[in-house]
Image (cartoon, rainbow, N blue to C red; front, side, top):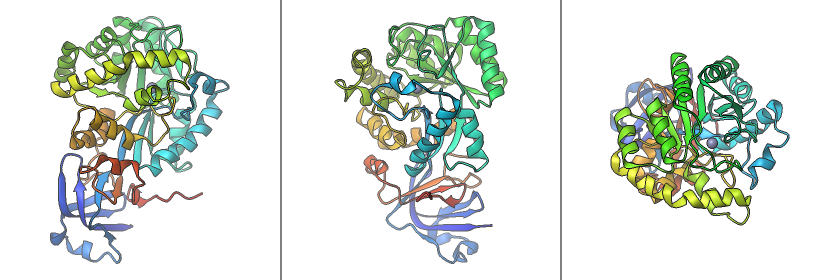
Length: 397
Ligand SMILES: [Zn+2]
């Protein structure tokens, strides 16, 4: 069994920062964390400890919202042309590497083709990549957001919604994505359009939860956000138009918020390049996003890092960029790092990743600078990424 000791390192453990720590890894697990000067004898016996002085160790980052079928080109719809399960899995294989190189050790795909097969390949060790929780296809109403870009299955009525959930789970989905409103990247449906009926949403949530699967809802408009929260979804993605009442309800229910600022910024920083319908809609929600962010943080809504990677000018491996955007728009660096680690794990229902704690899987990232002092450290290459106790960077091949 391989043993690694990381010596005299600053640790962000998923909740707080502690200086001069030691972290002992045996096999795939963290077996001891504490003051370096009090390291157990078996740590002292490790022949070549990893030098941690001046560096910071964090849990591997968790991105709760990506689209591995897409590379982040300017025209999402054009990129979807020709997409099928094989193409989706091949593109996903390349995109997974980008996450791992950027210290992202867990991702959830929220809508795509070939992603369940890809998740199985990662788990079998055939494809290098972060732990992948796939949702299969997203569920949307007929003509709803995502119907034209190949990542969604159209659903109408509560019975069909249940069937669609069962189909995704049969195909290997570890999570369910439901599209509760219109979207920026689908022409012909306004972002504030409230798509799913309460009955449909309740059926999705009930069926998914009975299988032990978490539900992420895409919701932009205020009414759709509230409807999704009240139906019991586990996270609201985008959540651009958040009222004070909806924020209070999210706090009361423990609903996570994934504001996908990488997606907002990717579009709004390239208004001349992206299709005009997308530019108009992105611009229309930009200020709402900013105000909602402030309202959510003030209300105490818990956040996760959801990049929506794959959307225009939003390349994979951007969890560190999302942390920076969260800080720009009102979170403390510590809050944003909690979002990127421990909150992400809880949101995905994972009980042994996202923290540097004894008994947890040793998914870790070592940084030359302390990201709590300077979140921009996260957009630079990590010194090392460990996955289940194995140093995996630089990636081979
Ligand atoms: Zn998305």
